[in-house]
Image (tube, rainbow, N blue to C red; front, side, top):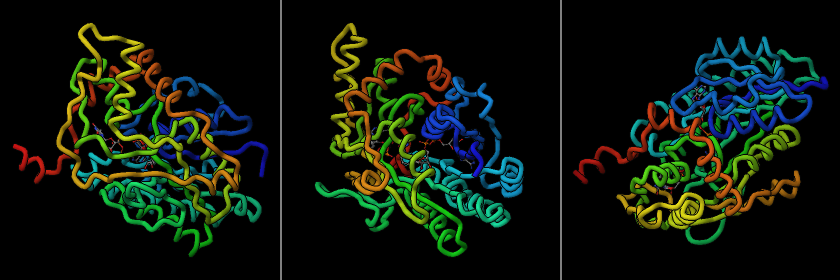
Length: 361
Ligand code: NAD
Ligand code: TYD
């Protein structure tokens, strides 16, 4: 391996992908090629602090486009591919699953196939050091009851169209490792949060609804539980896994921060009451319980002890410190989110399936 390491990051204009690109470029000796289709969820502004760096380049491409991907691999000669490109929002997968099948299933198949073709042409030492890292979700394991947590051995039981497509992608990547010998590694993480998060997801949505003085939608009674992982902690874990993860292994990454949705929403309201008080009462007054998401998973929780034992990773951010950093970031960076809210997505409800929507009209 040369001193300089070249890494393709797919989906590098998205929320986690951009955190990974920023993290990699903060390390010595790494060149990054960000390959992204620029869907609605992408934002190159998330990379404005690093896009001038000599080690960064961007290619606008769809992972479904085999010949384009093959050309990128031939030209850039990556030592590793970190595959994050995906349709990522559960509610949108309920309304329109086709894009999820295309990008997450067909796209992952085409990408891993091009990676295999490229890898088979590498000299032996480079081929041995090559890694294809698929970044996935804990949602492939389905839902938990009140106790226990997902381990790497938990059975796959995806419940949403999104989770089903990520499970399919996991299986494809694993099978390409086992059958063709491609050096693959996988990771499954819990809900990420932090700066540059597209405001369709719970935490940024709630922050921006509060700032607009609009009602804050909590699905059902807000008793579902998620295990929140600060995105910078995740980026650090992914770098470790692609560098030092064992071929064929899977690693769970979690924040050790289980909270009910209502606790998360109330936490944001309380932070905003302190940092940006309303004239007429608490932000908690804006909370509105709305019809639940169809097929809503009750609880996710991650056991990350395998990653901790084998590679020495643990989350550094507590949920309280991470949430405050996140809220402060949105308060200070309306240049980033205001164009999204004005031109792309203004916070309307997503993910009520047609039958559900009919039942409610
Ligand atoms: P995101 O929606 O913010 O970004 C996805 C990026 O992928 C976008 O920039 C988009 O343009 C790009 N993309 C989508 N389809 C593409 C295609 N066909 N070709 C090329 N680029 C394409 O997603 P995110 O939250 O950053 O998630 C990144 C990855 O991590 C995804 O694979 C997701 O499944 C996984 N993940 C996310 C979370 C989370 O909490 N956000 C949790 C677990 C796993
Ligand atoms: P989300 O951020 O969409 O992530 P995921 O579905 O991948 O877990 O949602 C997090 C939780 O918050 C989930 O249980 C659904 C809930 N939720 C609401 O209660 N209100 C909302 O407006 C949104 C977007 C989500």
